[in-house]
Image 1 (cartoon, one colour):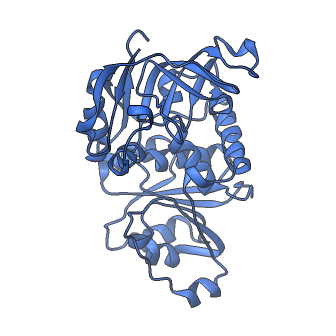
Image 2 (cartoon, rainbow, N blue to C red):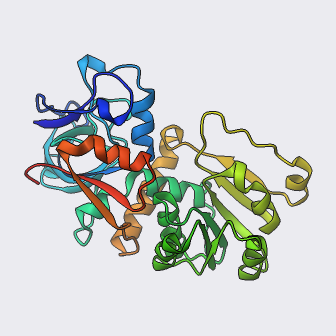
Length: 327
């Protein structure tokens, strides 16, 4: 099969298009004929920090969508032919989604509703699961809650807006860097979109949610903590999902205590199996209900996988997809 592979870590240009053996599924695994792969910041970051590749090469990219064409021992044979969205394909393995075929544990190939496109399926995975875990890490219902999503035009932020709407949030506020991104956030259901660089951003949020924000989906805690505290409702929950290796935040402990706020942190790769399963079920229900739509696409052929990862690294707005040969 054709695949984008790397033999050692580095920038996206270490990727090369190669013919490699088509993998066979082992016990508890399925093989997916990939239709498209969805690229996220985690993919170029993982490549940059990789120290090598198991057995000589590895294939990047966590997310994608396709059709199961083979199953390993212990997997129901009737899963063959099933349309699926794939998550965490390259985590703890070598068969990422930037290839004609990927092999993953059966529970990482999730049935994709017949009404959903493969492009939407490839846009789920890391962004949607991260968004849901930030919105409801403890299973607490969102119905009637006010939500602030920072970076509402990003992959996680855009999914967070849609999932908050689907789950019954009372008010969804998004912050963005400018009008083009504002249109993306408003287009998927944000009630109020605010440019975070505005001098009066805090007062705009307070006017939009006068009783305060109950849930935060935060992409830049070090930059936004003061704003978040200024608009938080008592007993609010603030979930942070992104940082650089050297990000440090000074916490005003007394202010957090006085309002009984909870600040939590998450990395999708280390959530518990139960938490991951709960997020998968929520995302699948939202997809089946027709509640999720992807960002505008930028499509790359597999031969240009390096350019696809570089586009994400360089801040492309929208969803980067890699189309697979023969799909």
